[in-house]
Image (cartoon, rainbow, N blue to C red):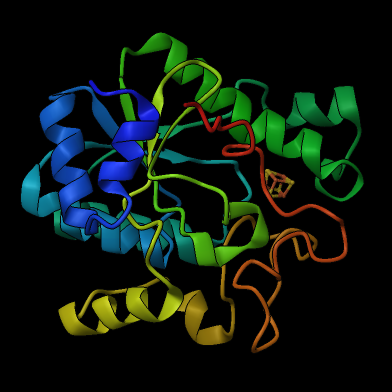
Length: 234
Ligand code: SF4
């Protein structure tokens, strides 16, 4: 495999399907996707299914998802016959409360995200041997995502692959409309980015603001930590 810098130059303007195709060819049966079933993720899953029918999708069930999100995910699993694996936190919620106190999401959202999202995914990555992890990050979603590359290494040396990096919100929704894809009903209620249900974690965005401006609004936090450690390796 060419070194990352060269690879990223080659993939800089590639269409999402080309990047997905490259990933499948490069790491057959060793590529998976993580998704929280938001709009960009659905576009990617729809594209991915045309290339590989039963690729694994990992859904991190923090225990704090909106019921609408879980129902929507279950509907897609059923109707699209998706190969979805659910990851759960290693420390049950009762123990989290006992050790760290109640309503951790309000008092220390970084720790809450670490316990309920980052650590379960880290543990899974150590357990199974995958080489490529695909996710639907886009540069236009937030300032924190502008410096991402199509392919980056994470802390464990696994390649994180971002086929939709060059797409913007309009393009995602145009694809959804063009293909008649179902979406999480919470979008119709004014949410632009959908995470966990506590209002301090997910709120409705003001028109014109960053898509992720409703996430941890007022907390000085913009990412859950799943992508914060990606390296710009040469
Ligand atoms: S988004 Fe909120 S509730 Fe979900 S894991 Fe992070 S802090 Fe906890």
